[in-house]
Length: 172
Image 1 (spheres, rainbow, N blue to C red):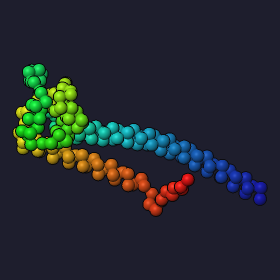
Image 2: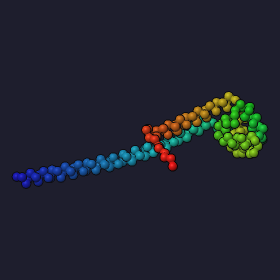
Image 3: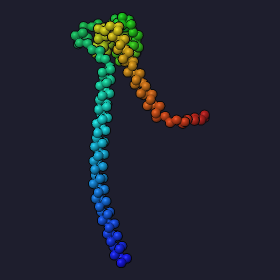
Image 4: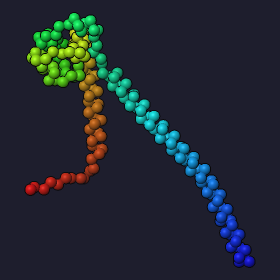
């Protein structure tokens, strides 16, 4: 009787394992397919987030555009660039922020070392059309977006830092 019981017990275990394996294999395939779907969806969301961020930055970044005829006809001398800046009531730094070019470029234009060309000239020609209020509004928007970006950057740096860790440097 003992041998028959152990044989039946062994057969039941074998069939149970087989049943579990077949069920588990189906579930494993399903989990794998769900993981692949999740991965592709998360990649899609990441790319969409990147696109919306780029679109938001483009929307926040006011374009200074002028027609090719206006650009060709314009004569931008150092005195005229300085006069435009004074008329708008902005500093060199604010002009650099507004146009998106470096402060040294603005300085070299006003000193007469270099002349603005291409899109830089187009930006200055487009600025001629604007008034003080519009310029102030554009500057406020630009500084606000820069401040937001700076806050985000600072937040990321602080998160990475481990609290309580100090670097001890030895003197040589």
